[in-house]
Image (cartoon, rainbow, N blue to C red):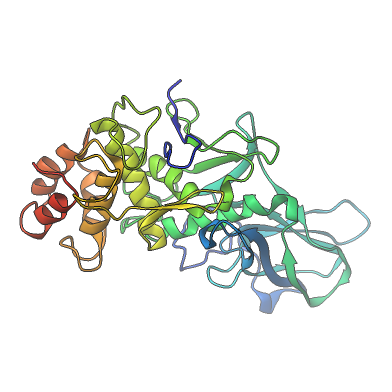
Length: 377
């Protein structure tokens, strides 16, 4: 079993419905009845507290809304058992939900799931692919609209919802204009779903399980770092862009941001590093303990090895190519498009063969970017 795994240590980096129009998903989700026609509605805002590793080693507690998270309305009209009456996702910007039924209800509550439509989810174990769930307060004799206010994810489960929320930022930048799927390799209704396995009692994790389950496994505190979550999602995304293919990776355990590994390791790990930083709009990697490592480097940066066998050199080159003032048009869209057409075993192949074929520059500013990061072809 081949694993893309994140190693521990100060410098080690391994690694590895109601449809909301801003999300752009068309996965099948039962639609709740329109509020105007409903006789019973529960409304509110889903939110969660979390430890923010991106804020530093103190990891201050942050509160934010849970965006595009699945909910279900459960209730009963009489003395029978409760059943699921409607489902949808929370608001893409405000975490709001409006869960309605066409008749008044003797009892009603909202069940929240650690997933977003059928596009991504957080489950309990590889052999127990059940979402985490919890229920809101139960209301009786519901007629009209009752506001539940802010519904908080239980503290023991907040990291699952943090993963669900964090994946939004990658989805929104996925650069797939042809469908709501993660890549243009799939079409609406047949999208692949990314699965994260998180168990609060398991410390080990931080890897994408290629090529066994193809799930991402996270240890207990790892969701505290958005970079870690998105780095591992970046491995899965590269696999998806390549039509469920992946470079043959060698000499990658252990590996470091600033040290030699191999061309294949530096390409896959550097790409995943760049995915996380690009999605979050910064230029670093953040560990789940709140420490961070900058990708800024040139020929004189102390402690850094040179060339395209160094993942930090590859990742920073990609970030500079995709930068708002970079030669690729201010984003990564053309790289995403070329990766759906052309498979690159390493960064050299990507830069010297696939970029020219896609009409992307390799000289001028692009060449100077690589040279500044000690890569020369």
